[in-house]
Image 1 (cartoon, rainbow, N blue to C red):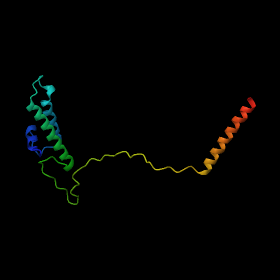
Image 2 (cartoon, rainbow, N blue to C red; image 1 turned 120 degrees about the horizontal axis):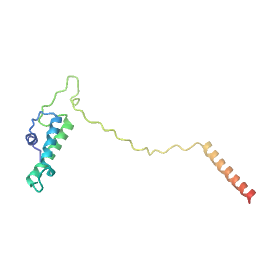
Image 3 (tube, one colour; image 1 turned 60 degrees about the horizontal axis):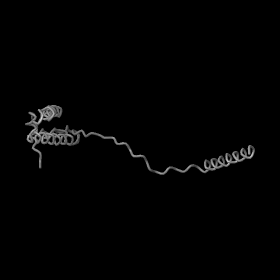
Image 4 (spheres, one colour; image 1 turned 30 degrees about the horizontal axis):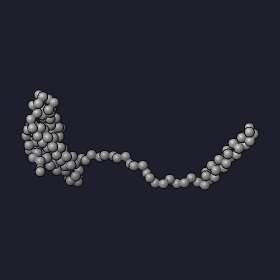
Length: 136
């Protein structure tokens, strides 16, 4: 089912050439009017809850359209200046994602380091044996 975005503009009292800020402000005001916690207890009718769900769906659709095309649905498309690419007018958000840690295998230590470590362990073991022989 395709959304009828003229219904969104008429519910919010706006024209399709409005700005995104105007749409957001009118949407927030209308949502606050339709919220069940602002109405009297038990006065939330099925029609008003359906109207609220529809309004949220239409606003989400219009916001996605704006993110994709850089304008609200129904608004006139702005022509790029000469020399610019057709997509230059649309500003897409940039999300920087953290890189996953590299699973590449690290290089083994050089043989000299291994030999020195082995010699140090042998020397410490010998000292412990000698110390135990003197005190034993």
